Length: 326
Ligand code: PMP
Image (cartoon, rainbow, N blue to C red):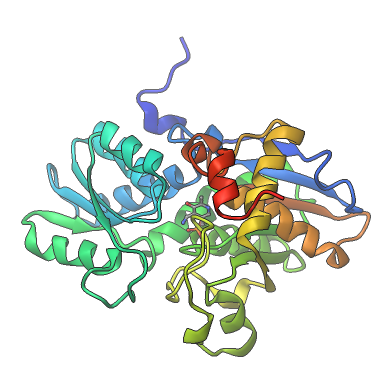
């Protein structure tokens, strides 16, 4: 008999799928690393498991502890799988711009959910960063994950996602393009691919309202770059330690509208029912057209599943309200 000992053993080994229509104007082969095949439907399962197992190994996380994290939902789901299998309690702290579906799913998986205002500075005590940190000091026998600065986040992708992409492309990958939030995915995969072949180019997708692109280009953390935006999962108003700017060749910014429109097009034209950052990644790829040539093999990573966005991107009323439908 062939079976996994538990759900955590099914994490990883996701397929690589060719994009056919949306990127037809590009001269190169475009392959999507399709992370919704993970059991929690997102790439974050990989890092949640790595982070928990590294914390267990180092002794910070002990049996029956409470795991606490500030998460836009996908990390929470990954942590919920690990917590359920390994017997930990879980508290997720989210900002109020996150979709209701994400909150409902976390509750369904047994997590306690705290919702904090989005439009406050990260250092404000009401922010979800500050609330998660505070809860970890107040609740005995608890552990604050901190995916932004925890090196196990990046390590998960260096150890699994990066090697999978290298092997699946038989070492032919020339570019890696991906949305950047905590930076774990781009830094872990990017540094692995560059270790195997220093000529691989690594591009980050950023949002309008986020600090990454300007910081990468100028070294300036410009607070004027920060304002509320709609796209979920990518862009930040802080510089997480997991964004290793030195291994990133460049960023391109995608508008909220383009990210939403391309997420819908992925569903209807490629049959790929994906989250908001996937649309941003595809539009970003098209914006980078001049960097690609005929023989290139471009890998783009799709982080999460469309089911978490049915009340938003896939809802015409919501799209109209935001001015995203022409
Ligand atoms: N897309 C989605 C939907 C996400 O949840 C995240 C994680 N915040 C990202 C992209 C960015 O990934 P990373 O945190 O590894 O940079």
